[in-house]
Length: 334
Image (spheres, rainbow, N blue to C red):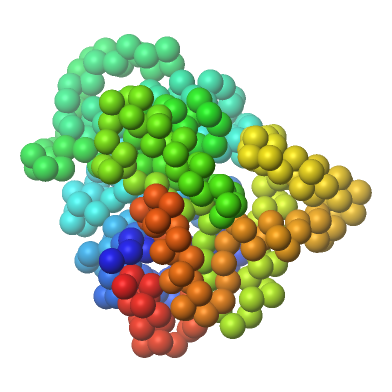
């Protein structure tokens, strides 16, 4: 069976009832994970609570919440409460976000993200395990030995899995050292084995077993008859992150050998606006970052991901008929 992941669309209007129905279909069809993103839009935990109440088996998580706008204790409270009352199904997805969102939306200084991520993971893990909180970090100094009130985790759930979105070499190394999973982004198909090997090498260097670590796919597959629209969305997403989300993602494209593409997108967006930037993403790059087409092609793509070492696979489905959607999910799960 494949571990399939689906996401709640964080951009544009949200039909909550339709989203809950989607969650129920996925839950019944064996989908592994449903994740909620949070940027400068809807609150992730409100939506997770609604999803948790509508489902019984599917894992639920964030992809991602940032580590600046809430304290590690506040994140712990939210995740532990959901995990306790809804069947121990949470997956914590963390990321640093970037200076634009953190400073110009949340009004918090974007400072020492790598160190901050380390301390968040360590503090959240301690609170989850109901350990007295004595923590002497470079950012957080927590001396009174607090534990979360009324939190008595069972022996097999003293740790909620933590997956981290990381793209720089140092952050990937730290993710391998501290986290339970890695959330990469924008990995062309021809670089899947290379990127997975980087994570596995970092895990072995940290004395950890790569087989006990999740790596989410760095791009989605879309079951659709309208491939032109689907690939346009891939281009749209890539162009936005390259041109409008600061330098982190742009530099990622440079590191993986796509400087010409990234520079062309930035120049086109700067000179001609968003549409020009999107059009500057080549068909070849879009088709290496994701797949759009019939379910059989999607299954081939997912199996290639699994062969490369990815363990959780992001999918989207265009079909709106509930029974047909369920059947497609079952085929993707296998």
